Each structure stands twice: as C-alpha cells, then as structure tokens.
Length: 501
View 1 (cartoon, rainbow, N blue to C red):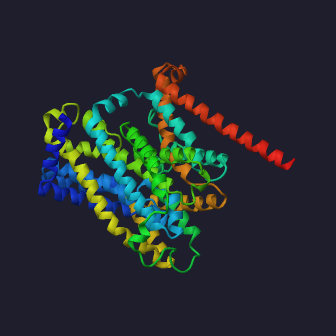
View 2: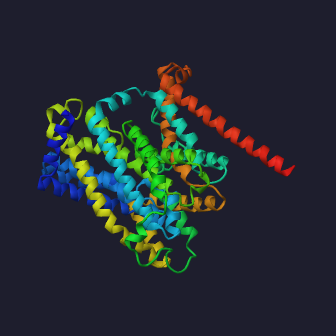
View 3: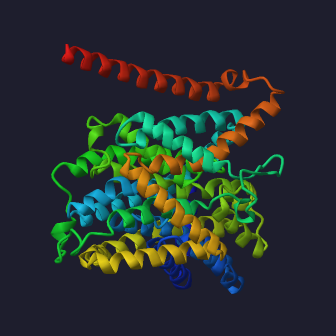
C-alpha cells in the first residue's frame, strides 16, 4: 500500500502542466530521434543536457528519460520499413519486421511493435515500482564469473539467429568477436589490432556496424530494383490489423521478452541491445515453427520489442537506487542529477521522494503518450514505402552518413560503415546472416573482460565458474545447449542416411 500511495503522489507531480509539457517534448524528440537512423538517444541527451540547467529537477529528468525510452519506440519504424535500425537494440527487429513489410504487412508489423513496446514498458515500470529493492539484491549477486557465464550462454544462443546452418551462425559470431577485440585493452591500456590507425583505438563504432550490416548492405542488395515499395498506397485502420491468431501467438513472446528485458535491465553494463537479441534467440528456440523466423514471424517482433522496452525502464533501477549507471545513457542521467545537486544512491528515495516517484509516474504517462502518438502515425510511415526506390535509397544512405558522422564528427566512421556495408552485402549473398555479428561484437568485450577479472579474483583457478551456484547454472545451460545442437545434427544425419538408403 505504501508503494501505491507514493505512486499516487508521483502522478500528482508528473501531471502538473509544466512537467507534462516537458515529458511530451522528451518522448516526441526521442521518437523522432529513433526514426532518424544513426543518431540515437546518447547524442540527443548530450546535446540537450545544457537545456536542463534552468529547469526544475523533476522536469529535467522527465524530459531526458522521455528521450531515452521514446527512442526505443521510434527505432522500430525504420527497422521494419527500411531494414535500417534507428537504434542498435532494434537490429534484431529487422529480421522479421522487414520481411513483413515486403509482404505488404508493414502496418501490422508496426502495430505489433508499438503494442509489445507498451506492454513491455508497462510491466517494467510495475517491477520498478514494487520490486526495486529485491531486483537490486539480485543484481548484487552477479560478479565477474556470473557475468561471464551468462554472456557465454548469450553467445551460444546467438548462433540460432541465423536462418540456415548453425555453423554459419557460429562463424558470424566469431567475426563479431574479432571486431570486438579491436581497440584499447581495458586492463593494460594497449591498443590491439588497431593497425596503427588512431581512429581504431576505440574500436569500430556500434552504430557504424549496425548501419553497415543492415542499412548499407540492404541498399546495395536492392539498388537495381525499380518501381515503388511493396505496400498499398491507401493505408486504413484495417491494414493495421493482425492476421487471425497472431495476437494469441504474441502474448507469451511478449511476456517472455518482458521477463528477459527486466532481468538484463537491472544488470549494469548489459542493456536493451543484448536483451532484444537474447529474446529473439529464445523465441526461435521455443517456437514450434522455427523455420518461419526470418520470413515474417510475428513472434520475432513481439518478443524483442517487449524486451528492449522493459530493459529501458528497469535500467533506471541501479542508476537511481545504487548510483551505478548501466550504460552511457544512464551515466548522462546521473550527470543530470548531480547538476541539480541530487546525489543518486540508496538515500535518494528518502531524501527526494517527489522527484523519484514523480519520475516513475512520468514513465506511465510518457509511454501512454507514445502509444497515442505512434498509432496515428503508422499510416504515414507505411506510405513511405510507396515512394520510388530511386528516391528512398539515396535518402537512406544520406541519413546513414549523417547519423554515423554525428557520433564522433569523424569522416573515418563514414568510411567504416561503407566498408562494413559492402562486406555485409557479400556475406549475405553467400548465405551468412548479419545479426550474429552484432551480438558477438556487443558481448565479446564483456565476455573477455569478465573472464579475465574472474580469473584474477580466483588467482587463476578456473573452478570459480563451476563452484558458484549462479555461474554453474549458466555453464550447465551452455553444455545442455551444445548437447542439444549436437543431438539435433546427429538425428538429422541419421534421417538423411535412412532416406538415402
């Protein structure tokens, strides 16, 4: 009851006209930034942080938070319609969202993305409201060994993102791991595999990798197409309806995705990108028809979209309750708090209850605003594909270049994204899927860092990975996954041998 009373007071703060206005500005800007490929919430919050100096602390945090989770909604739009992830966490949405758009069902795909995002975010906010102390205790139980085992399981699951051979999926994960070790070693400070190129000392940019593998590669694959897009010119509310049975099939993926996203959101250093990939891999594993994934499966949109939005909400738990930022965006949120002389940590709720509960209430308000804002715009976004390809794709390449350049104000990144795009085009033609590369790139450095850190703490004893209960559970899951893949391959080989005999 105490939590409900506090939340009620928070709604009184969030619904003040001035705070409501800043919340709307935040979600609108975040939604727009998510639609524009390559810019991302980090750059937007960095640019708008000085604006918050003169604002009330609650209004400032509501606006910045709205930009963050608003971008999670908008990023699905270009992923589905143009195969171009506006935010890295939406790269996996391209796998089934874009094929649905190619089948003339872009409106239905966008509706499911918005619906799953709203449900995932709402459950994430509820968890944040009622279970923050418990979730913080869970996060404290994760050390380097647990992080390593969990990330290793994620890498093994990444191989299932490929449509075809698991071996090709593993090969692309390894490519991502190789790209991930380029840059400065976090322990020694030595530049590795940078080829004496100063721009590579920080490693390839994640945005450049995502834009190249999905945006540029898809543009090159379709450069010779003529005519217009594959959706109907007239978009009605009927075109936004899901096919028979799709809503029923989507509920469990949404709930599973929300659980995965909520879990990864509270773990510092993970975030919504990893959560969305793990959710997609999980849905493909449990599906009765895994062959439909990659060809327009509605579960491939529902699970990841619920997951990344739940992670975006629960990421505020360690930031606000412990003062530990989960990623660079959360670090900026901490900076905004400190600008207003507010110390994040366990004492925040007691010392500034109106700010804390007002921010949580603003999440409910902001997500409802996003749903109301996005559904009427679906028709406009779908009409985008009715334009001739000769107009769409030069614009896509222009926005890719602008978005990648804006990250570091460096033309070298533009060259990197074009090179990755050309490589991605040829690998796709050879039957290799790009999605596992991205997850290998994200998880690789964290796997290495936590592996080395765990061995340092155990003085070189590898038994630390199997003697701690949580890490041992993840390692057992890895072994079971490998055994399952090996058994499946042997069974298929025997079936093929019997058929041939």
